[in-house]
Length: 91
Length: 154
Ligand SMILES: [Zn+2]
Image (cartoon, rainbow over all chains, first blue to last red; front, side, top):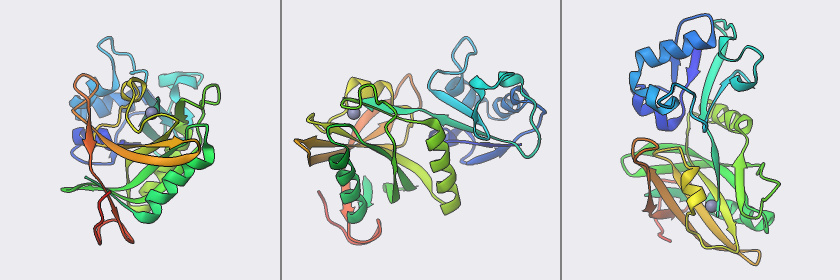
C-alpha cells in the first residue's frame, strides 16, 4: 500500500512524497515504513512509542485513532495512509 | 525568502478582513527551491476553533488531506500556511510556536486591525523537529503575475 508523506518529513524518506510499503495491517505498514526509514520513528512516535499527539494518520479518509480496530485494522494494496501533522495556533 | 503573487497576497489578506473579528486560515501550495518557498496557489480553509475563533485557529485534518491531495494532483507541495491576528500584531505567539510542526514551511501572519489588514509577516519554521525547531523571520517577496517573475519587495 501507499503512504503519503508530508513535506517536513520527506527529508527522512529521501525526498519521496509517497512511499510503498508491504503488510496487511496499519501496524505492518507503519513498521515497514519506519524500518525502511528509521529516522522517521522519532518524528512520529514519543519515547514511549506512542504516536505523537500532533501527528494524524489517516487510512483513506478515516483517522486511525477512531477506527474500531485502530492500528490493527486490516489493509489492502489499494488502501492509502496519509501522515498529516496538525495545523493550529492563535495569538 | 517566500515568494508569492500579488493576487495571492491580496487574497490571503482579504480573507482575514472577511473573517474579522475571527481568525482566518489557509494553506500555501507551491514549490521549495534554493531561494526558499514559492507559492503557486493558496487554498482557504475553515477555522474549526469556533469556541474561540477570535484568537485561535485550527484546520481540520480531513480538510488538510483534501488539500494535500489537490496539491499532489497539481504537482505542488504544501509549502506553508497563513492565518490572521484580529487586533493583534503580525508576530507569532507562543501558541503559534507550540502548534507549529511543519518544519521547512512558511507561516504567514496578517494583523487585521478594526477589520483592515495591516502588516503581513512570514516566519519560516526551521530545525529538524520538535526538540530544536525555531521560527525565523522570512522576507516576503510579492511578485507581479506568477511567483518567480518580476520583483517587488514589501
Ligand atoms: Zn497566530
